[in-house]
Image 1 (tube, rainbow, N blue to C red):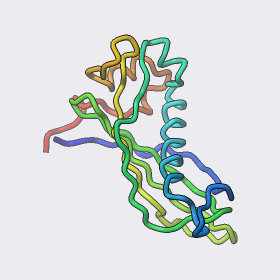
Image 2 (cartoon, rainbow, N blue to C red; image 1 turned 45 degrees about the vertical axis):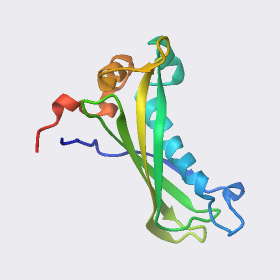
Image 3 (cartoon, rainbow, N blue to C red; image 1 turned 135 degrees about the horizontal axis):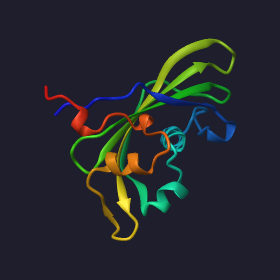
Image 4 (cartoon, rainbow, N blue to C red; image 1 turned 90 degrees about the horizontal axis):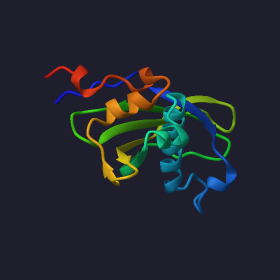
Amino acid sequence: MSVEMLPPFGARIGVRSYEMDVNGHVNHSVYHQYGEHARMEHFRAAGLSQHALGAHGLTIVLLSTTAHFRAELRAGDELWIDSAIAFTTRKPFTMRHRIVRETAADGARTDDLAAEVECTLGVLDTTTRRLVADPHGRLVAAASDPALLGPGPQATTPS
């Protein structure tokens, strides 16, 4: 099965002092929050706020998330968190985020890959409390900018 990915959407964020752990770098759980921030901004930009989804009887649920840590982050670092989405013919879909330190706290340009976060998500029908078939189609129908959702599974080519 081949999965096409859109060119990444992304969001910028600065590392805050309260995100540090006892070792002086960003706590592991915060990387997941960075991914969630980019993910929610991606959906918001597509017109899929919680309010818009709710009007269609839908919500997006996180089924699993995995982070791979590549470099430590410190307070004051400036980050770019990209967001790429992929759909298959199955109910779950995938979002991938790369967390890149663009600028270190000392102002040096670094562009270091700090972490990769991969999430499996589903679109939940808020009445039946079940994942819907064709999540891409359901999200496109609710979105104001469906181009940000990329191609659906039928747009992929077999490998």
